[in-house]
Length: 435
Ligand code: GCU
Image 1 (cartoon, rainbow, N blue to C red):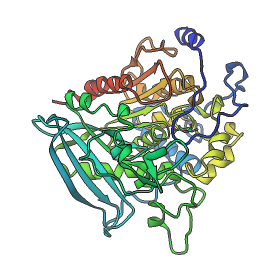
Image 2 (cartoon, helix red, strand yellow; image 1 turned 135 degrees about the vertical axis):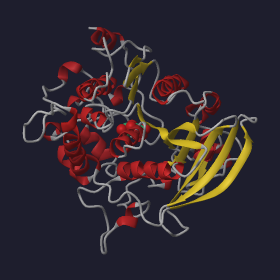
Image 3 (cartoon, rainbow, N blue to C red; image 1 turned 60 degrees about the horizontal axis):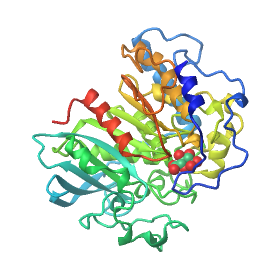
């Protein structure tokens, strides 16, 4: 078995992501032999036990799985959009990236009021485009100014996380000049535009600041019923809100003639990879869905309980999922779904799952298995999924797949040029070249 052999060759070094991760827990399990025996729900068996055998049966089963994820994992998204949603063009810089790109800044107001919460979208589009371009849409962790050093990018005025590690990048919870471009390695803009794609991004904290404040800030209060103070146990947490924000960004892109809104790949890294999967599962307008190192609550199977577990994630990040998800802390076998069914919700659209060797916390093998176990749904719908010959996890740095793409690369938990090159190749295959 290629997969097993690859897994044995991997030497794991524990590293933690650079955002706001708690210290490495001493008692986390990384030993395959210690995984309790588990049985996964079958995406092709309905709740009442009847098998799904034809493509015509799938929409009903899909709706059932989606409802289970809403009720038990991410929470229900209240409404697609509010009637007052509107957009404000704020800036256009034609000579961006030495003339290779056009920079656009657009503010998305979620209601009729021109006040927070709003989301500042930044678009970087190839200057030489002959028509609407396909695009990658992803949220960023640290503000639009962090993705490139250019002073043309507006410094955000949103709340930013300030930790011992942020130094002079953030002061009084506000972005500082020194932070321009400090996350540029995750956004290879020149490569993206030279391949004919646009890049669309926004700061995730514009939608919901990433801390547990009982959902008083961000977009949640916009949807509270009278006297409601917090989401109900089956209503959205922060991941649900961020995913909703991605759909509002797509609402804008549908109005921008420079972008082909039918060719938008939604992408996310880490907690934002969990988010891109949930966005792509719910909103079928996303043509391609990409999860980069998304781990627990993203692509990794919860029942494997390797690295980060449901209990651990609920404890450390109580605002990410819906309150009902707490019932499954240390109780994964009771979950009515598992994460391969999240990938299956994207079918028949192309989906890509990526892992990194040094990201054991995210359970790379569990991420692969989810992709593999979603394959029967793709096949039912007439798509090859991972395709012929991909049975086990492929060797490191050997991307595989057809409608489902997968790679595990050398290195740590990160979004790298290697990852982007694979996503660009995948997009070329499924969206047509960006020309
Ligand atoms: C923490 C968390 C992960 C998450 C990651 C990130 O490590 O435990 O679930 O993916 O942060 O978003 O950076």
